[in-house]
Amino acid sequence: MPQFRAFNKALGQILKDQRRARRRAEQKYQENFKAEAAPKRSDEAQNQAAASSTTPLKDITQSNHFEQIPQFNNIVLTPLQQSMKSKLVSARFRHLNQTLYIIPSQQASKLFSSTPGAYNSYHAGFRAQVAVWPQNPIEQFIEDVKQRGSVGTKTQTQLWRQERRKGREKKAKGAQGDQGDEENIMEVTEPKIDPLPRTRGTCGIMDLGCGDATFHKSLLPFARSLDLKFHSVDLSQGDGPNSSLIDVDDIASLPLPDGSADIAIFCLSLMGTNWISFIEEANRTLRWGGECWVAEIKSRFGRVGRESLAETSRRQAGKRGKAEDIDDGELNVGRVEEESRDSGGKEETDVGAFVDVMRKRGFQLKEEVDLRNKMFVWMRYVKNVVPVKGKGVPKVGERGFDRKTKFLDNAKDEVDSETEATVLKPCVYKTR
Image (cartoon, rainbow, N blue to C red; front, side):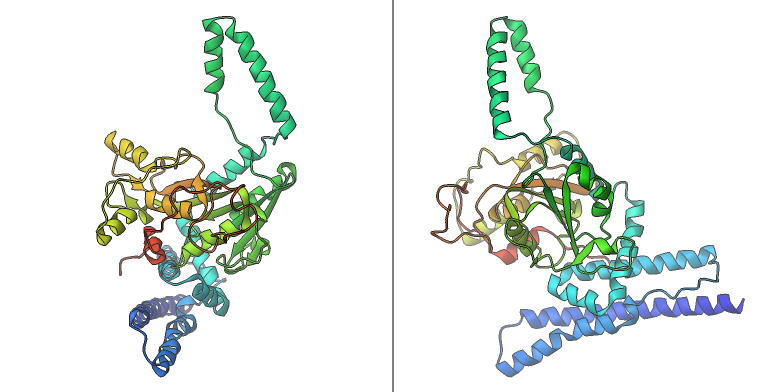
């Protein structure tokens, strides 16, 4: 009994410390953001502001909020104690999750490097969240790799022979009348599975913001048979069973050469105020024709029928004119969503602004956006246009700039980068 009383007392004290640390951290962050938003002052004032801007991070990392829960291995927890412990883990996760959304990745990297226990606490809470989800979004990408990886990649000679054979068959069936035409129609409507993009036979996949490296671990047994190569990146390795598979780097500045990967995956990892720099870095490290897969929470996007970023910018600038034409290869996302809403469903998610941000960074939608799940959105992009914004914009006179690339019809920049970053809302929790 004395051990149980000591444990309950320690656990209650920890809960009080967490609430106090959270209130202090929120107050410090608000003061920090107000200081950054203020106009530039003298050099001495700027130095003082710079010193104070590091204070919230230092206070957070040194607080007890990110320390791990004390282990009582010789004590069997009662149901009440287990409930208290799970609430503590959830509270720590919510605070860490919100923090990662409202700070840049450089500051998040310093947070995890100075407090390794914070990374472990975050993913302990994340695993608890995934356990109650109807589906883990990374599982969809794992199945895609298995399915598309088993499809062989044909050479140019094989494709040429296949086209010739189809031409001869079509000519022969055309002489048979209507029966032959029906068979041709059936051939066209058969589902087609595209093979994975590969470089010299190998598909290099970057899991950016990999977390526990679930994607890497799940596909590791198929790496040899499907000829796959992985590069799992996150801000810390943690102490999980897959920690040896994780490379510690900031995904805004990867130590990889240009065009060295075939697929980049962002599964719930577009966090931080500089998430657009993640997209630009993915464009740099992907080869031409490579793919970028994105899975995000629906609540981070807007709703169909509301004013888009481009429309807001035009209205504020007092511009009037016809809507811009869409490329033949671009999917009309908004129209599909409006039709699904008119069909009797709830108000649908509008990813049009996000698609526009991706398009300006060199990515076009490969297929329709997957909105079937109630919680998540899956999108697959291909790198087949020249970026018109960000660090990926080619310089005039670069080799192959005029002849070998497909250009966007609209290179005019209507929305500034800070406004573009607001197309994905941060996950902010209500104060409890």
